Structures are given as structure tokens and as C-alpha cells.
Image (tube, rainbow, N blue to C red):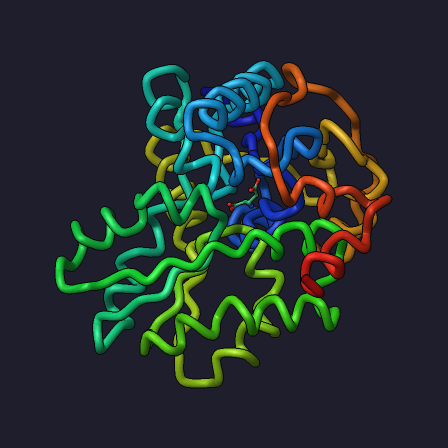
Length: 296
Ligand code: DGL
């Protein structure tokens, strides 16, 4: 593990930039290589074993780019591939599922915690198992929100469609009487404003990203491997398997600073043979797909 090497960050799209945003504050001297597997997104609608294979391929790609450690900045990919990655890679790999759980257990009073994420994340039951280890009295109410990642992917973080989708997804959780909400998808910190408006002011929103970055900092310190980049020296690398221009524009808006260059590299083969109802919603040319879905 060499301190000058970059940290690999993986998500299927722009969601992992919410982790990058935290890293910029806590670890400004690290160089990053970010890979978004936009061509094969969403992983959240795929069967577990297929998603696991895609995660391992994507992480191997980051290792090949010289990553000294990898952050799986995606709940879906963490649920599908984190465990398998531990046996496979010779560098530290960190999962976004886990670091926020003690904070959520500490926040809940009535032990009813809401979880929002992709279908893959919610159905994996991984959060519920980790909550049970942390505090067996906690009940987790999961809500899959398949429309939200594509809306963020297209930069619609404050659009009316997005507000409607957020309200629709949170309504059943409020009906269940949750008093704490866990963000189980890295796209969702970018929807914080709409989520807060739909929840009201009393329900804490637990974003695991800050805790994840603290864990990363501890791992790098333990391996004596903290980066020493001079700020402004070398730029991060951003690589996507499809739609580099959209990633550059939306990513710059979400990060609040310009991403100057995005490389396009296909990793592995396209996923074929699966009916993924929300696939069209990720396609910038089919922007109205979400609206059509909401109207049905
Ligand atoms: N950002 C990803 C997550 O945290 C969702 C993307 C996907 O389904 O591919 O789960």
C-alpha cells in the first residue's frame, strides 16, 4: 500500500460523489480514482449473483488503476459484493453499509427506523441484520425507491417529479411511525432538502457517509498510508463506462465545483437478458421515462 497511490471510489453513477464531497473536507490530501459503471446501472434491480460479479469486476478495475484502498460508495454494490471482495483483494475495501448504524441506534427513541434504498439493498436485509447486532430492539422499515437514483443521475435534485417521488416513498414509512431515517443509497444525500421537507423537522436523517470517511481515515492511518498531495497539485481521475458528458455536468453541479475531465472506459460486458423496468429512466435521451412512470 503506497501513500501516493489514489483511493478507489466506486458507485454505479453520481451517487458516490456524496462520499467524495465528505472526503474533500476530511481527507483533502488524498488523490482519488472514481469509477461509475453507468453503462450497467442500475445494479439495484439485478439478481444478487449477477450484481456481485459486476461489483468484483469494477473493484478489480480500480485495483488495476493503482488504488491503495477502495471505498464501495454504493449501498447496492456493498450489499452485493463487499463480502466477496474481502477474500479477493489485497488492499482494504470499505463498505458504506455499517458505519452509520450505531448513530441510527443512538438516535431512535421508539426503535422504529426507516430505511430507503434500492430494491437490491432493501431486499438484501443487510441493514436489518446489522441493526439487530447493534440493538436487537430496533425494527427496520425498508422502502425501495427505484425512481430516485435515476432522477439524481439526471441532475433533477429539486424537480417537482422528484418531490412527488420522495413524498410518495416516505409516506408509508411515516405511517409506520418511524422516528429516524437511514439513507441507504449514496444518491440520497443530494436529496436532503426534499427528504427533510417531506419528513418534517423532528426525524433525524442518518447519512452514513461521514462515518464511512472516518473509518477510511482510521484505516489509512493504521497502514501508515495517508496521502500527502499538495492541494491543487494532481487532479482526481473520474472514469465512467457511459455518458461522460452528463456525468461531468451533473457531477459538477452536485459537488459544487467543476469536474474538468471524465474518461470513458467500458469495464466487462453489458448486462443482457434481464428485464429492468427502470433502465430507460437512466437514459438522458429518455428523460420523460420517470414522468411517464409517475403518471401510471
Ligand atoms: N448509489 C447506489 C446505492 O447507494 C444506487 C445505484 C444502483 O442501483 O445502481 O445503492
